[in-house]
View 1: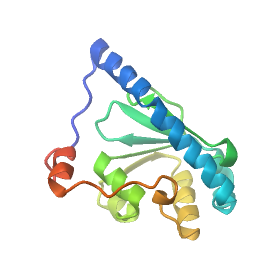
View 2: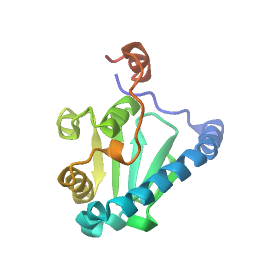
View 3: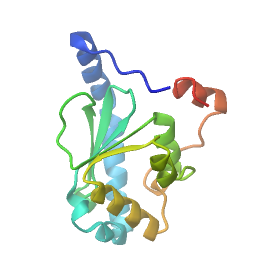
View 4: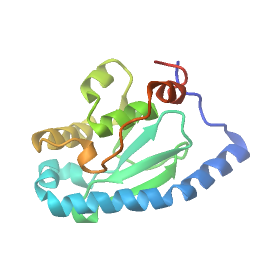
Length: 165
């Protein structure tokens, strides 16, 4: 079952903008974590090559917001944007939120999710592959950037994924 789209119209757009504002502190923390990693592991960002200046839109499926990540080392940033807006980016990654969290924890294989059509990539796939390869070659998981606690028990994950198990 696909994620339900966020309501459209003036009320939906206003709610999406309010959600963006509410998530700004999280974006600031994620940006700081990205820059901290750049100081601790500059080799990861060197491996990105030209892709380090790319803007990558990470979209939880059906959510009103998305995260635009620019992994540009000590200038790296994370912004919260309205998902339905035409946000400039070189690559767009979309998946259900629970899958994105498992990918960040390193407990899910991104390649398998992509080939199972659970993860969608649009735009410059070379950017996404550069990011994936740099993380893999550095023997890191995305959890090294933002350590997350373990996911909640299965019933909560099932509810988040719209009833899928």
